[in-house]
Image 1 (cartoon, helix red, strand yellow):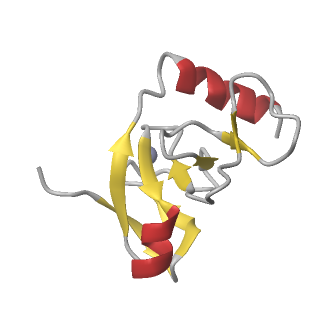
Image 2 (image 1 turned 30 degrees about the horizontal axis):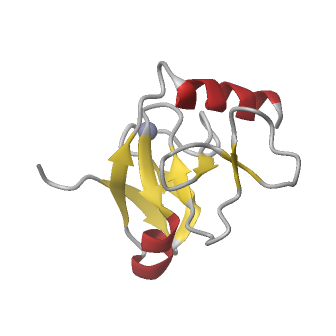
Length: 104
Ligand SMILES: [Zn+2]
């Protein structure tokens, strides 16, 4: 299967327009770790969320469709290939997304 690409401007992950059409200003985009789990920037990590990765290997999760983009790839190449997809309808990541929005 061909790699899908999101639209992105100026190597900036916050400008991603997901393949599904979602953006920061629509459904929002969530910073996640290399498994697609939403991360929490702080010491007191709420249950269900992941701690900020110490290696700064950050990803951007589209909570609308579950596509995940590598921040490093965007910053280095100015393109946003879909790195992998996660299940945002059910399971641990769906729950983490709910917790993320509750806290922000
Ligand atoms: Zn999407």
